[in-house]
Length: 130
Image (cartoon, rainbow, N blue to C red; front, top):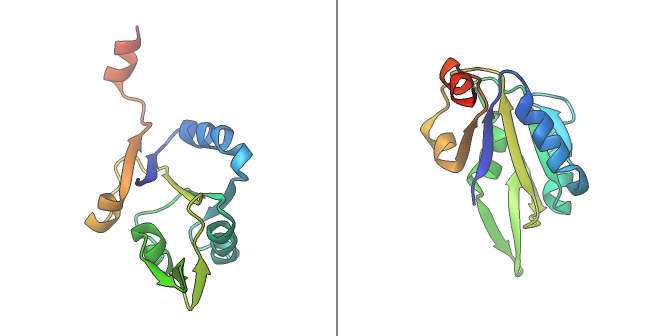
């Protein structure tokens, strides 16, 4: 199972994710926000969903183990290293990432770990709906 990376210039995908994940106590944050890491720590341990809104083309190195699912076993439980802390990993945890960039360029390791969903409206797509 891969994480979702939404290419969503018109923010239609964000509305869809927010509606879909309301019962899973969706945590919404932005890359570089002061409370981003504490929000991740809580969500990973509690099995909540996290949406990173309005991402640029760079991803904080602290999140790389989360995106790559670099789990370790500690006494029969799975833990994830986030910064300098080891967090118990709850398998119900979900990660959604969203960018408003219409043609983003992410490193290959990010693209390999994510399913890219493109919500960009195109002329061809509009014509197909008519």
